[in-house]
Length: 242
Image (tube, rainbow, N blue to C red; front, top):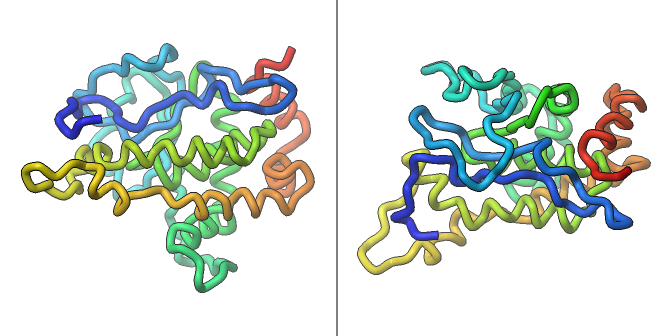
């Protein structure tokens, strides 16, 4: 996409439907959306049919949301789950040589497990499509999406590919956050994209953590209090299995 495209809409938004579960089963469209943070005055998206969402799960910290009401508060129920708050109080078990984002993602999985379970339950009980977002729609959203997809058995390679989709949108996300570098005339965003990439080893570390449990992400959820009934209902809601 060109850097001159309009920025008055979500630029890192997509539906988590259509992901492969196995035996021809796919995740169901219109259940979970993921995106960057909505802004006041945004135009409604034209590329997702299930809009507006019924529930919004805002994963940003309190300091990120204290300045104004959520832009979608008038059309959806907004639930605030500050995924990174108080993580500094938790000692993370991770290789010192790991990528910084790997360390962050492990901090979320190890230190914010109760909050991830809360995200799962909000989406499970949502009446209508659920939108999950943080600021960029990359890190906190990426870990949450990996959990929701993994809980119905979506293949790891598909989860990694879903996470990596943000890579092509990051320049425009940063423009929306007023953090993008100003490019000299003639320099395309492709030149700087590598600086804003989504390293797959970070999300792969999350999947490796899930993989230590029987049934992977579903087993991880069980170990943190999610019931068999909840997992069954999530399969029924999020897959097109008859």
